[in-house]
Length: 335
Image 1 (cartoon, rainbow, N blue to C red):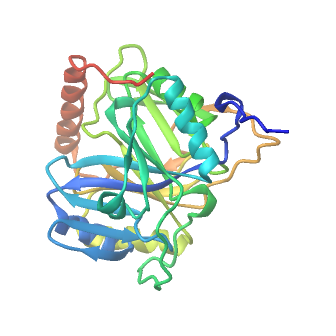
Image 2 (cartoon, rainbow, N blue to C red):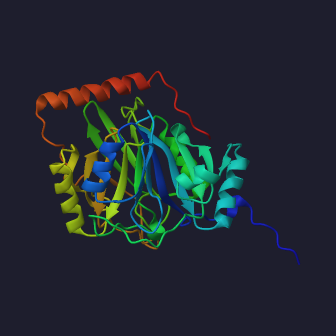
Image 3 (cartoon, one colour):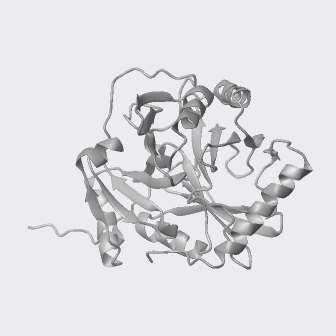
């Protein structure tokens, strides 16, 4: 008796997807080298005039900084658990008429994978899907003792959007993402609503933020922040001290979130977006979890580095200006 393939819509992909690598384009390679190697304590795997590649575990490449003008993310790599999961996602893309292309050879090797499928996701952010990372047995040389990765992936990303409903639909329909919880946070001149989506046991692999009412996007970059998870509290504290001593600005000093209970700080990257280094977030028990709502992004801490009133006014004015200009730009969504 011949078995028939299970329709893609009936395959449960929850638990099959995790953040695998990020590809960033920047002209400021030396500053990136200082931040990631000396500040956050990653392993520098390869460097040239055109590229830096960093490790945090046995994957050959997790963070890739290539030389270019974008000062932004130009690819998010998402690892699927196996070929069946990948084919289910590709089938769902086909059903919705979303185009994708195969990336192989040197272009894939730059990302630390044997091959990947590249598509343009919500907000025009390139998304790359793969199953086979290139692994290496070479020992890590890091100032941080270890990073938490494994089946939950290398961390999470937060994205601001004028079309959050489209963002949620994309990740829920294509990857079976589940809502962990929501946070509402008052910002200067606006209320921000944030939805936290999990793709596996990590509390969230994605955070989607949107202004309430009039939809603005005050963030210049595709991703507002990238999160990495340190193995110990000492790793977190030591990286915080190193980043400060190297002169990197703290967007938010050490604090704790109310939903995943992670302790973390946010350092401003050379490209202008933030990198969050965290420790000890909870993992979700699927048998008992119920989404909740919170009215603040932090239980305590996470205060911006004190630069005085003038610096705060300039920052807020810049955010307001970008938000106002975003009204003139449509935001792409593939669904």
